Length: 170
Image (cartoon, rainbow, N blue to C red; front, side, top):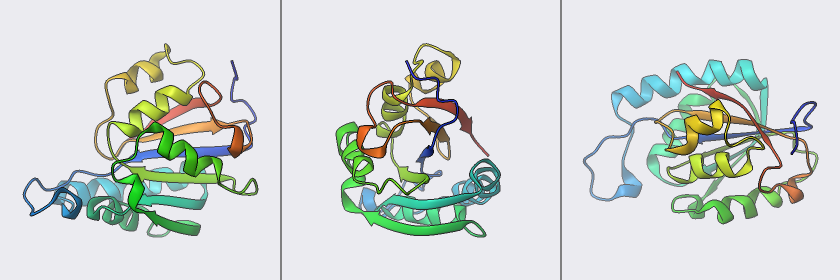
């Protein structure tokens, strides 16, 4: 198993902030007032943990786009890319996107949905039975960021190849 120490890359898997329950379709659900506060509070915490984000991969759902917009205010982001397939993505779909990330990309933020965020964090984590692995086993709450050290090339990211370093919540 990889220890994650001295990782060359960092991956942040983030579940969107709290959304309203009422809307015409699930993809158009907007952030609730609580979600707006969560996203705004989480931004500085992630900025402190990462410094910068080289690439943000964002689900095209309204609540994930709004989360990303609020979260990244004042954060240095090189490139942001919206993906329709992240809305109902499974673990393999997100892995395919990550494996295509250029090797020069150091920090990647994925803003998505449950259960994919927690399932992927647990799958990638080299110690799924430790405290953090247990914390993500049953899912993560809204506005929770799973920060993983990625000591392998993006194209080699796979089961047990990363280290879940922290869970960051507002």
